[in-house]
Length: 176
Length: 131
Image (cartoon, rainbow over all chains, first blue to last red; front, side, top):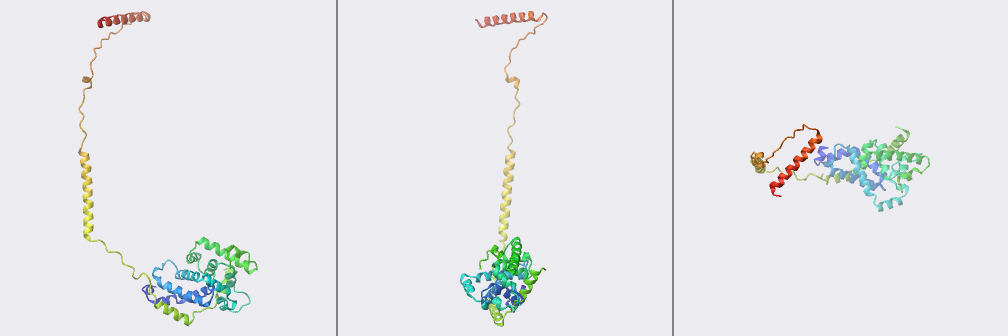
């Protein structure tokens, strides 16, 4: 970390090596195309290196990286991109491309369909990354209580979605 | 961990993603062109010269001394001493001539005697002032 903060790009690259695949996997679920996800990852790492000196050691490094990644993913969702995303067919969906063949639908595909972006991100950080509620609230810049409530609602919505009911999703403001 | 959490974890693991060599090359190249911000941040201004501290200290001491002197001067201005006044001398003396009444008779008789004395005194006063 000290070498990276001193300006060593190689040290920073080593520092983030173990996070890159996880970040890309998360970004693939948020972006319209594989190329967008790769661009978002590149931007995330560049921004992280640029502002590495402002990193507060009280945060977990992964939490800090995810916060930057979430901001970058949100920035990529301009109206033009959303329109392109709506036009894409399922074969071009980067998330579906990365999921192995299975008899059941991947729950994260269901979650993306039912939850809004913030709740989806909270669910991902909690259940895919095993992040604590406090860290999730930091990464999303939300209160702990907001995080707890929306994790609970996200679970309910997924339960309802798995059982074929789509009632819960409307409670989130999911418009897509 | 409950069933839903397990399923979410498993399904996340089923999303197979790795950073390609091409992307890795792009990232490495991009990082080489970035310099962390904050390096050129100007250092804090140096401490003020010693003369400044001397001047401010002397000014403070002089101000404190001035305040002390002013306070002492105000305390030394004692109020003028009050001379004792002979109150008895200032008050004009009245020549009071009083006689005690000898209450020897019954009260009704005494009252009559007193009224007669008052009448005599009135006549005497009128006579004195020329009425």
